[in-house]
Picture 1 (cartoon, rainbow, N blue to C red):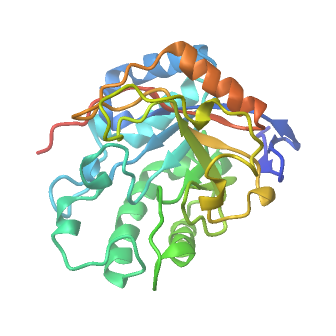
Picture 2: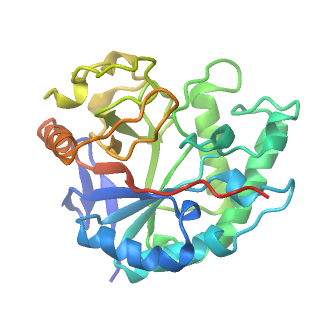
Picture 3: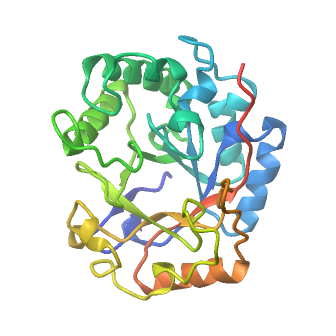
Amino acid sequence: MKSTYGWTKQHLTKDGKPWLPVMGEFHFSRYPHRYWLEELEKMKAGGVGIVSTYIFWNHHEDINGSLHWDGDRDIHLFLNCCGEAGLLAFLRPGPWCHGEARHGGFPDRLLESDMHLRSNDPAYLTEVRRFWSSLFEQVEGDLHKNGGPVIGLQIENEYSKSGSGCGDEHIRTLTKIAKEIGFDVPLWTATGWSSYIGDLLPVSGGYVEEPWHSSIEELPANDCFIFADKEHLPNIGKYLFDPSLFPFLTAELGGGLQVTYNRRPRVSAQDIGAASLIRLGSGANLLGYYVFHGGTNPVGE
């Protein structure tokens, strides 16, 4: 019998009971597919119950107009491996991902066009629908309702654009398009830090280091090491939603950090463990590690 998933203002639920899962990010298109099952089994052994993954548009459409889902780009195979390893899955298909990918995952041709990207520009939405429709053809059988591991989907990422056709209006439009295509999952999320979320569940982040910082000196401890409930977290005033209406969920507890030109952080297990415990003590109901499993951007064609 399939489990049911949902949420209250305090927590996620599984079969109607409070549920506190651990989620780990693994970007399948950044790792050889012959090792996926082995690596996913390691993640399961490490305590992970949900695998989240970006679907980088430009990893699948390197050559203009042609989408590919083979080899290391085979999302259906990856989700089959998740199921075989006994793991649930959460999809993060953008369309803009960031994720330290070129142009945030956008194919070059989008930036070379006259489209108003990340907005309700009809030309842009047509392109998004084409990409997501192709993705849906790959993952339809892997959705939870069809017996697969996919229980959730995140719309966009770190979205803070405002104005006509942007903001919550754009997030709601993307959500509507995804549902029209056929995506039907128990949990729908959006990144909540200084971001518009539409009607979606906000997920939070927290990085013990800041590779994007301009300094080349050691940084002081940040708000990852401060106990505070979800309504009084540092910078909560920047959030564009009412935190009292939602459970406190994290999608990016940053232990796996990228290197940058001026900062190459080495994060200790002690730091990551402390940040996780402090988030738990602050009421977090989902521990989402980003990234849990490393990888390398594929060489373009």
